[in-house]
Image (cartoon, rainbow, N blue to C red; front, side, top):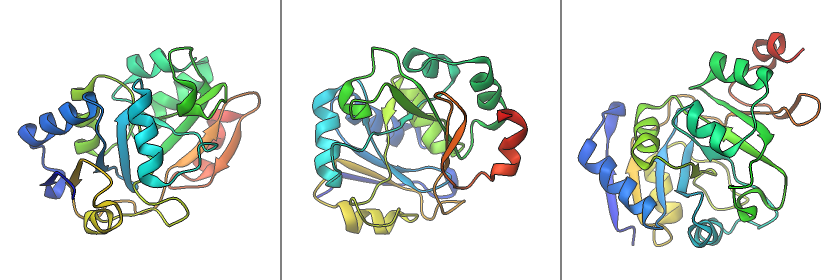
Length: 209
């Protein structure tokens, strides 16, 4: 069974619930929670055993890297190398439905990036996700909260059904606002859209020419 289910509707900030979920993450646990796009499944990115648990819970192949959720640019710069272009994109579109792929720093465990020298950085605009990231104070490894090979989930009830028995806590915020995944933009070498998502290319284009 999922140990704790916290119902937080309308993006209401419940400090007690979020502090408990932050404690779970910092102690090696797995917490599913909403972003503005889809639900994510998070753990402490610096805790390699927790990341292994996350891969197992999702049945995710270990060759697939995991992006990191951060609360601000300061934490982002602890795990990734930011060019001026990357900082401009961060300032323009984060918080928001964008994942930036950047050169990683050595502190990021290899298991998170599946051996790659780059890492995805995500700063969600959902207030619950942002506050949880702030309370954790560490980057959160955050793939989508679904079993590998299945579609991303946008409702807390569906996350519970998919991951019950595999995770430690769920923050059920109902349906997510956007309803599909973030756009992934790589700035490693030449700018490249890895995945078309919630943020259209024509909005990004002036920043990546």
